[in-house]
Length: 192
View 1 (tube, rainbow, N blue to C red):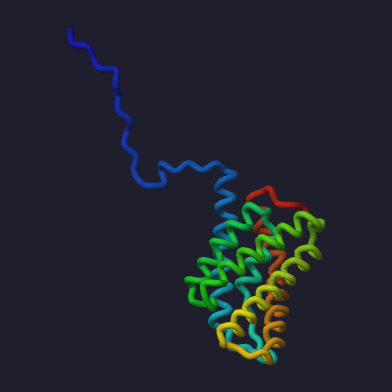
View 2: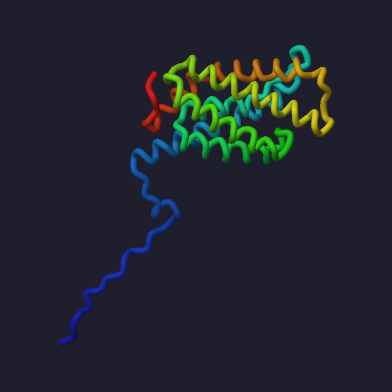
């Protein structure tokens, strides 16, 4: 009498996603970051196609950095800092940015204002508005100084850079309810 082997091989699975198991919380967090990315892509298209032609006293908007700052302030430090780094690298490769130094400007400013908001301010719209406006003004000031250093601009255009910062921060704060709603998808969001 021959003995049957008790070994039975696993059934082969098909597809790459069949091996990927995500919990409900992980799926929601993934959805949140995908929505953030889609909004940034939409803002980039809006900025490059429509808003680049609209000039108010020689200033246009710079929506992507302001939106990155708003998202980073809404998220906690560890998630916001990584997001700002990845988003600034993608922004650099979108050819909408001025140079590789914007990665440092956006990431450092996002980390600093997020740290300031978490350490010294209560969570709320006014704290977010203060941090986003401050980060956007400092970002535009850093771009202005870099432009002066490289000889790309003159000191007479400081007003246009400041107006760009104010317009960009106002546009990002107009999107604040959308960012706040998306931030609540994955949980662990501070309450307002």
